[in-house]
Image (cartoon, rainbow, N blue to C red; front, side):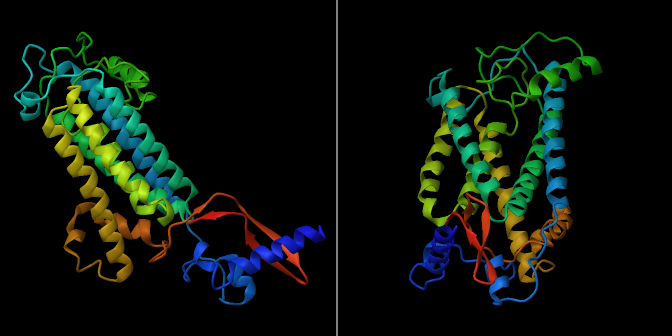
Length: 328
């Protein structure tokens, strides 16, 4: 026990040394960590972060995803099968490679795992998760609307579409239950239903995951974002080669995912800077939700991942909170 206490003392001293502090967490002063409070450097307690906005954002994601599944289950009966694929500039210059979709989905899984790791190990994970989930929910609700109101022929004559039946509630509900668990990944469940073309869901997921990693990953692993950027566009190219979407679907998916993410974070920055009311982006109908999601968020925080939990050890007559491991 004595040796452990000495080791913790040395680690604590090393973290607070001027030369070595750059390798460790630089906490936001509006959200002081336990070390500062106990050492008397700041007054008061940590500001509590409410979990309810994150729960609300999670419900919104569930609604957005469910609405997409319902839209696909319904529009399958309305897809025009007796028409040839529409003219497409990309299709005119590149051949169809049906297996290319595997490349796109493997890249999407890599980006998703990376984004989820950053989200759930981030110092301010509850805030990062709520922001990300809100952006995903908005993008997928818009996609569900587009899929519902606009149907086009499938992009390839080689695409299999299950026979049409009817649009009864029982049939649509059964299709939703069957599709829901696969998350739209064809490697998990072969595609049978057709019609969800306008605004590519793969593109929404790929670029939202990329932006989450680029925005919230620690500086030390930021070089990966350049690799992921190239992979993201490679995935889009693969989707088009596989004839899973028209080029306009990819363009719309890229535009929606990036604009929603950037607009939300621009509004969040305006809210914390006190310029929210004068920002023209606040004219959006959904901007009224930004103050709710950002009310307990720090105005500025450093990106670092907490890979281990804190431990508190007693040194002398006082408790000192020491980080086991942080990754900046």
